[in-house]
Image 1 (tube, helix red, strand yellow):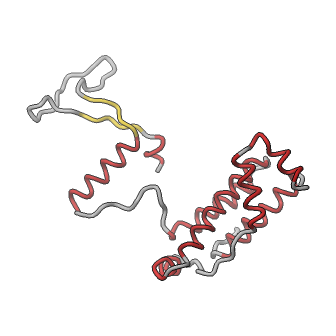
Image 2 (spheres, rainbow, N blue to C red):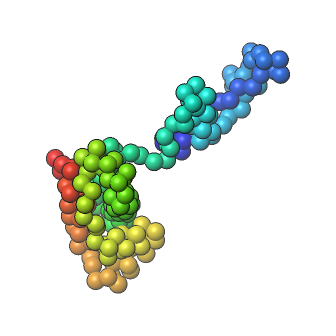
Image 3 (spheres, rainbow, N blue to C red):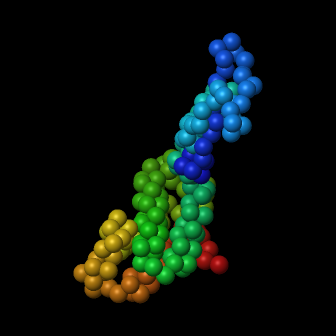
Length: 179
């Protein structure tokens, strides 16, 4: 994922006769090359794997249930490590996305089996819908965080405490540890 969103690659072209050109420009790059995005690198890697194995690699945009507890722990750390409302709201929004995904997966036999294999209970509790909606509002409109909290009769400290508790409780409910 890091390479896809932050990386760059260098694509080499041949001279039409199947031979790579060995001359270089002033920056030391081969003349018959061009910079490509990280997405293009990841996509090409997937095509190369498919050509060799006949199978497409897993979708790099998704992570497996084996990583759910680690992802959840990252949100616990974010909620405990940030003192600003916007960062805490983003952590809650990410935890909410995970909660929604687990809920969807638990609705079918295949998903339940994947969750079970990862040690995640299929009947994990859902996060408070009001707190989820509030966190989404703040994450989507961070410049309006104070007015959003005021209209919901919360101080930043109260919101942060509620989010921290909700994220920690959810993390523990899916089998994660807090230490």
